[in-house]
Length: 553
Image (cartoon, rainbow, N blue to C red; front, side, top):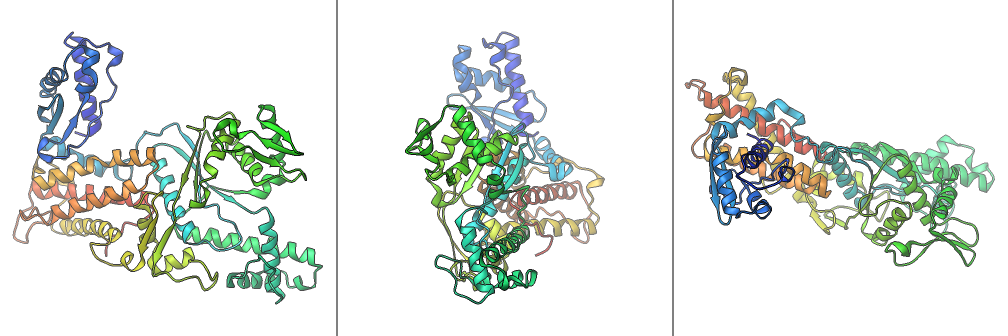
């Protein structure tokens, strides 16, 4: 019996109590589903609910009386072993071994779909993250958002949402001109201008640009800067794409800021917001009245000299997302962007959206990796690709995903590559590889799932604990999606791995594989189903974090 089935049984018991007049509750007040959760203390049963405390007052009875009535009705439900009433009216429910163990079959047959839910069905979300300037390589700060953003997108989709992952290319503005001048200086062996880009990577870009445009040094300066800027931009953006793909991060949309300007979208956004009554002209400039919507000051959109501000581009970009059919917009921004939260929400309000539901701004804190070396190419940063080359994609992604985004993070590089149980990613991946090897050895000894499954065989305490943990996976995924917290999945996987290792090492020798002189029994087959159910959930959870599930370690 799954938590969903138990929830439905509770709803049916409530509806029956209303129908026979025992419960004086309007029929439409009976919840379609009843929340159940795992008790903190195992001896209290498999599941618990406080539904009697929630509904008793409406029904004109006491919580305990309602709980006792529900307990009597649930006691006759197939698959439920016992129901107890605790305290003022809590229901503690224990399943019989067969009903609980049946979950193993459910998980194995569902395979990669187990845990997929409908909590966010109908939500259409634009998820923007990283959005680094294309003037240099991705660094350690971008790495955190790459890992978290991609994992969040996977989790949101798994929970039923329709998600477009988007990279906003900041390819407009003065920094692009400085970038072009810097590439040209390296290509012509002249001094890099003040405020320009000086890393060795610029020399590499310059060499590529010269290979594409050998006549670059002979061109008039303005033309040469433009050529160096565009060619250098093309190569740097290609490197960013390649590094992210190697990190397992894929974007559905690469949105160019300068195309936003070239299309006239900024001017149209100003006109549109003016029509909605939120634009003022003052001191020769055009202002958006964001103080009407919690911002600390109004924002200039068009300067007195006629030039649009970054804020105007932000507004146009927001409207673009809205016009492209994304009611939900999630921005993942760095620690230095706290000031953007209110102004983006104000843009949403000015655009006619609800800033509490149509936009979310998540701020990530800084991350430091002890022992990492500064990039030889960039000089003063730790490059994402160097970090991955040193530690490995899986270890980097998992280590970053297992902490809340808003917590400052300091990791030790050497700890992240240790092959020991103290290293969480190794601990979880080893559990998966162990399930694979157990399954292979069991099949070699003649244990086959096709020969039948008696879920009642899974009655040992360590087996019921493991099954209980497996039931939680769909709920954990739904919570991670709703709260935008991928770390919940990582922490769950560690708990599942712990329960699995405890089951495997149980002193009662709960073997999946029979001894050489031992016959294959129903218990062996049932444990193989359970072993494979654990493998399925570990693989599904690791995939949500963009981490591989190795078959051998």
